[in-house]
Image (cartoon, rainbow, N blue to C red; front, side, top):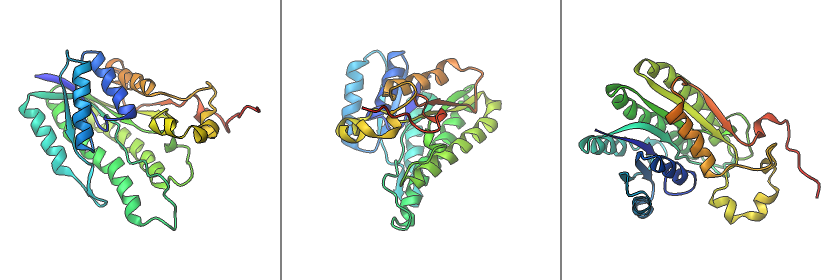
Amino acid sequence: MKKAALVTGACINTGVAIVEKFASEGINVVFTGRNAEKVHAAEKAYREKYPEVEIIGFHMDSLLDERTVDEDSVVKMFDALDEKDIFVETLVLNAADQGLGMKIFENPLTDFMRVINTNLTWNYFLSECAAKRMKENGGGSIIFINSNTAYRAIPDRIAYSASKGAQLGMMRALALDLGKYNIRVNAVLPGMIKTDRWEKNPAFYKNVPSRFTPLGDVAVGEDVADAVWYFAAHARNTTGAELVMDGGNTIQLYPIIPKE
């Protein structure tokens, strides 16, 4: 049986860094993405860069519609991995609906439902399917890529903050119920990350308050990947834990913005 890490939302940004961290450590990787062409291109690029490990991409979306999680795609993916004798020892739940620009009184209820179903219900079902196999194979690790917005709200992101707060509650409950099977469940809580949005909007991100951290910088994808790797490879006796990695943003009452 081949062991692998499964990383959701891994065609761009932080997901890429997480895939590359595992692959560079000699771990086989399964990843998902919402766009078939991007999944195919990413799979090709990963395989060329890391020929010594097996890398498999799956095209899937989280939902059939705002109200309905796509359970069949998840079931089919795990069935396909079973047929290949691939065991997902580590599940990294990175994909998320950002819920951008969601204004109370303006957005329909289905927008709220879409974010909650993607970030909470879909991730629960992925965890259930992975944990079933971990239970049968001696244990494993489930890692949520959460957010410091689970504790600190930002404007026009009600559904996102709600989903991330609920996700932490689910993480702790899963850790409690799955611990007896040697399945560890933890969460990484990044703050701002330098993604493609950062590169495309330099004027905005130059002055956004959350960039002014006590450490003087914000995270890159590799920082998140290192935190994930800690939980996956080193935290043998840690479960139900949160690792905040936001440059210290959460500890300050307000950002200290230099006067220029």
